[in-house]
Image (cartoon, rainbow, N blue to C red; front, side, top):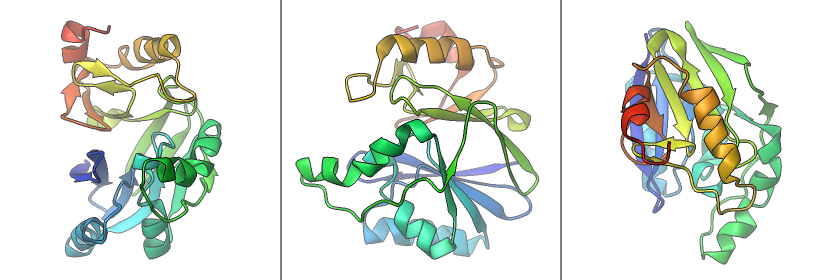
Length: 211
């Protein structure tokens, strides 16, 4: 059974999730820590609970979701998992940030590419990779079937969907991803999004105005 710790990092208010099981192995989904205080916060939690970070998983390559990749990769010798279609997004992230006056360390590229239906493993826990393009071409959701939990990144939110007006975004693709890949999951699946509060597949089926 997994445990989930949520951190809200950076001015973009990104949800960074630390997921661990009884083995104490853990994965980090969307490492968004950018300030030293945020790096300290997540590291102190890891050390307090004697956790062993295994991998960093990125739902997509936008700068606000990868701010902390370099710090956590170097500190814990983690691999960084993401979809190849977002390699260019990561490569351009630092320059893109400069346009908004945001300075952060050059993010490392994804060290491992993952694809639709891949199964990832840490400790006693399995994760199914679901490719959900639309917010970006390489958007990914992570499904923990045994625990009825989905991490949707910026694809699906409580009562909303991801924006599609950024480079690589496509509204029709996003809606198709949500309807054919996510809304078909069991209704009791809890959805942890890239920003904001958690929701469920049932709640979004019943009340999401975009769907």
